[in-house]
Length: 450
Image (cartoon, rainbow, N blue to C red; front, side, top):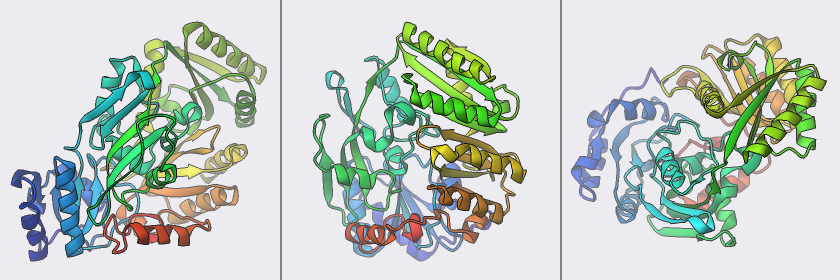
């Protein structure tokens, strides 16, 4: 948490709030002293202690949003786009001042649900849980498992590329994104893609916006691919020797089995799942009931052949299991715990877990998607920076990365949050300059301080 943050509420910040109140209703422009404490907590974890937040503005229409951004562009005000604010504490600290936080939470309408085409178009501020409830009425769902599912908005999920365990079967957010509309940094409207599955126009632009953390534009509307709800959902967790777990994961990926989730879990999270400490492989099958049962049986045979313990979960137990796992691996915004997004070559996942056990880190948990090597690592906030950097070095040496999503402000000021070591930095800076030449959108929050 940003315990050193103080807000001065200067004349400059007051002037911004007053000007934005000329664009949208006064009741939806909140100066710092009238911002809800929940939002304040989130904001203070998104900015450097020397920065100032002028206000929180929540337009109701795309036209209002465009006018606000045009005004900010003309006056060179920094802006932090947000949905509900549930993931504002992720990423780097903005060191620009003054700043206006622009929320799309009132842009929350269902535009179109083409059930027969398996597509849905919504405004960016619609909450994930609300969209899932609407889709469920047509026996469909969005195959994403984001953090803070009750609060997360669709625009925020796209902006942070927050997919979750469904990645095993359905890949990432950008693979579900069929169309996108957004407001540019100068207030102009733009769009890419369309509402049909076969349309690939603007595909690269949609890739750019996925995971861009609001640095290229403010998303207003998205079209996504959806899927039929499965008839049955069953899970099996194999646990035991780490090397045997690695063999089981490899055998699973080489088999004809088609899991929707296949995560390697280790550390304190094992106790959350009601298992002995160590390492496990959590595999979920969602299909018609006979298929789910048959696949569970085949996975159990793999586990038994490797002397692994096998625990099965069906129906409500299955749902509760994945809810507990998600809750444990999603740290509350006000917590001092550290959350990292990690990536490593799948063949090296167990080696990384060996290192984690040997470091004797405080209260840590790890969850890694076995097919992609992407996952999440969390631990207590008193983790030493050199331990974090050692883990980053291990990931990078083995074709991966370690980026800090959430951590105490002091730690974020000590290390480079993203830790990007690839060769695309110049390309990213060039793209940022083309989309936002004055660096007004989420300044300093992305890779390399972009």
